Image (tube, rainbow, N blue to C red; front, top):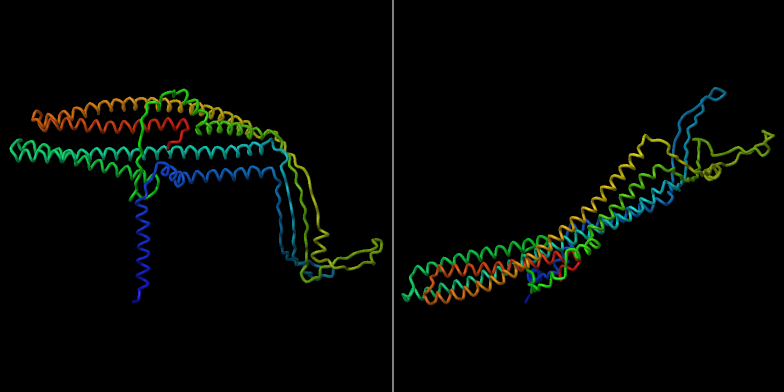
Length: 462
């Protein structure tokens, strides 16, 4: 029996592809994996990381300002023309020539400008890294928020599913009672209407889960098809915010948050701008050196030179070869020297530049104070939100317990015919709302405490 190789190959690729696709769909993302993936693959993070590489190259440039430069030069030229000799004949003087040079120079002093530029380049590396840290922190917080939002909507979906089951049991029970003549058909219509309402709520809950999953998948920049997250058991101990005051959180954050450190670096950078502007008041001293040589050849003539062994006897001379190597050696020359440039007056340009730099440094100093004020405001707001969220959670717990008891009593009353279907559904709706309120309060409190952890430098995935 012969085997069709093409069919076998196609089947193999299909099987492998299906297995890979199935694996991707079975992938369940943990919170830590989600944060790590976002930080590793986010385009803005990659762009900002490249900014740090640019800052590294700026430091290389600043360091190079202290080193001497070295430049080589070479030229090839042709000259065409002629002249009239003493005997009245025209003599062609077409020629070609080469020149070569090597020059170097170094700045010895320029008012410490190069030193200030070098310090700025080092600050630039720190600043770009802090900017990357700020971006990573914000992305991490967004990922945690979206992850918790999925879990919240999943719990709401679970409640909606449970309500469907309760409503279906009610419909089945009332149907039996109506068929036996114990309950009027109007009661069946009411519970059927409630079932339809619960089904609509279930669809809305499913849509909310899908949208939350889509939001996180888009944030991670992955496909949302088959995207699934791991459930987390959330504990809500009240001690999470006990023992923490806004002052304690602020003191830690003002010493460690990258936003504050970056603002402090901006002040140092602004002061260096002042130093750079002031450097124009100082003289500039540089040193330079060079060497050069040349070669000249007249077209149609041999490269020769006339040598007089005895300068007092012009009739005693010798014609020697004068080729490229000989001219290269004979024409070789050297030069070196210092250059001092002293600024005297430039229409107050330097003074104005210094004044602008000083004013800008004062503005940036105010920016640091504003950054600290904004940080304190954010921490105080986050702390107040966390306390309010915890109180809301406690109130929601109490309310759910009361509504659960009320719903159980209402079911008994309904079973004994004391309460009609409409009244029972009113109680059940209050119970359902209490469940939803507790879920929302729980996740709201968890996220608010994550914000406080954010300012305290506690990993958001813990």
